[in-house]
Image (cartoon, rainbow, N blue to C red; front, side):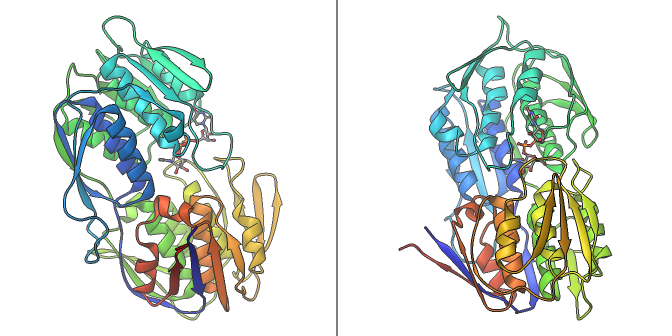
Length: 431
Ligand code: UD1
């Protein structure tokens, strides 16, 4: 298994290109199941999760071609995927695949809408809580799906004539359930209205793509989505929006080490709450024509109090990174995690570097220490892993991060982007 070795202390200076958003690329790839025509997606990040989903989609019969060579050095412009689901040959998404990535469960809605039946394994993904799928199933049932659960599989079929539009009121905001129902509603008969839908920018991006494919959607960016389903959808060309979590991660890294970095292609409006929180720590955050510039020289980091919330609140996917930054703040910070119940696995690893963090239920109390020192640590989930990278960049001496396959799931060319700005970071291949 690969490891990452970081020698801390270097400031970050320069430019980091922001990749396409993983959490938009995945459902956009899945949207290819909705049409027999070609869907072309630009700016798709080269990530382990994307490659795994590509395998799952091929299994369903999607013909998938990628322009150009993969992972070549040169500008990071993302890749262009051409997907064509002329014939869906298999409506089963097996356990071996779905258990490795939760978002692959989102094939359920599109398969059901297009093929009128689907068998999809219950999902896996990061171990950050129980993460049920009840809301997905409630939503799809409202559209007429008949659903059974048998031996870890969801067995779903539609009545004759397929799914039909309906009103879905979610009792709780869920990105995945909103995505699944949105994708299904695009091919359902009549109108679907989703209330209390998630408003994450990635949902807006998928909705915009569905509009290009011929679906009529009102309320994009709001918590009420109104979708006019179509009998068939057309092909389209769509560019994946920039990754706001990658943006926030690098912004926090610059604040942690000090320095001056422009995050090119980043869109501040996608993570304003996180950027406001960062600004309150004493870091300069400047929107520029090319992206977002983050500057911190000399001054210490002010502590903060923050709680995670669905968009437009502070994202849970940046909670661990914010905590890493707060480990050396000038005082005590309070971070409350309200989305997932088990998303503090980075705490004990940060403690190995010398952080002083107390956990009390859903709240972490972080007492800023004078400095961190390098140590061997272990990546536990995707976002937790990158918080260890941030902490290691600040720490004195050497840190080795084990199990970095978690990072490869969601961060494109992380070492290259950071070393390009002066970080001492290298991957040690397992051989
Ligand atoms: C997505 C993101 C993930 C992010 C999360 C919250 C992708 C690929 N993943 O995950 O990076 O951390 O949103 O912003 O986009 N819940 C239920 N029942 C359900 C579904 C969810 O109770 O049927 C709960 C979850 O356990 C969690 C909360 O709702 O407590 C939010 O989960 P959800 O928004 O669905 O997260 P994901 O879509 O899994």
